[in-house]
Length: 442
Figure 1 (cartoon, rainbow, N blue to C red):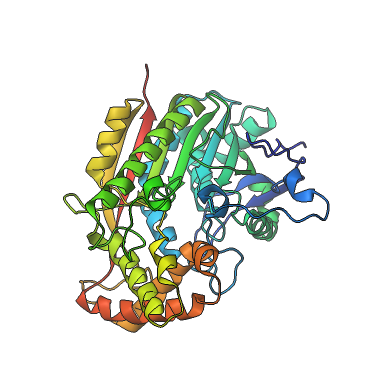
Figure 2: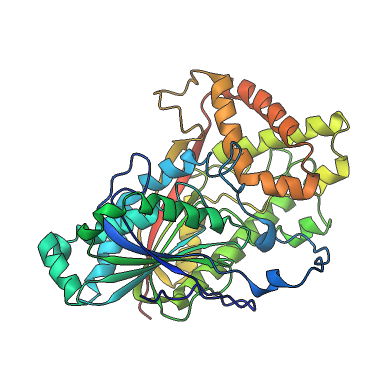
């Protein structure tokens, strides 16, 4: 059975992937899902990477090439330190389920539904969205009776699903497909129960570029990637303005720098909406989740700015010790921005390409292992260590690229120490926005 090819609209050419026929009843530790048939394709290798022995010339830092989570599945990897992201995405299941059900209304028997998870990253969270989408499809009224579904599959009338896992090229797609293969092979015995085929493929590329043909996608999902900008604002990266010793928006960040961060977010988000509008079918849906600010909170305040300001302090400490050059710190800015609900709502309405079906804000503890009630941190040292692992897994590659690998362990030991004292003020809570959108009819 042929698998559709993993593809990219970039200049690189890709070799055809090898399909694997697999099935699962349970995709994640502790997450039980309905069985479904999955055919996964390994990510194809860019032809450019197979050039003969010559080393590529040095290249300037670009977000598209260099931004990714810590790879592999070791102690400091994103795969081992992403429970915060896992808990927040599972909080948004009602919005995702409603979007899938809405898409199913427009599909006829035997149709193919195309879905994409933008910013899929790697590790145990990658398949959460695939699992939830497939579970929702299976439990839809049209598919509620297993014998009926099996008959539909045998007659070629069952809905099939193409699911693309998208992220920047630096993402650890090898781990994604190793994990997929390992988890599904272990449960292949339940394949006879499967009825709704799902074809999974990796698709490298920036969400700030076109990555799909026009009107080809029914559902986009994105969790925790729209906080990342396409680039650091030019007037900060070229030194026209400086952000002092801040790596993001801190209490000492000049207002002109705050304005640059906000304007870069506005440009990127409007571009994202325009690109996805072109790629979605009529009535197509998007469910977007990202770290944010509470209504009325200034960019330098709140749970997001708090964890990054502590990292700025840790870097300043290494500057004072002579471990980091001051000019290195002054020239480092995060390609990042956490918007407010009002900012997001205004941009969507201004763009006028999508109808807001639902938008809400909830809070999640940066220390996802702390489920205690109240605002008092039970163990500041332990909580700081947990948060430090999450932050390191998300930013380690950028730190290495700019400051070098030698400071990593020391940097996060200092970060842990400063954050532990900071948590005596109360829990570090992260506001999170989830917005459900539907392509407008124009």
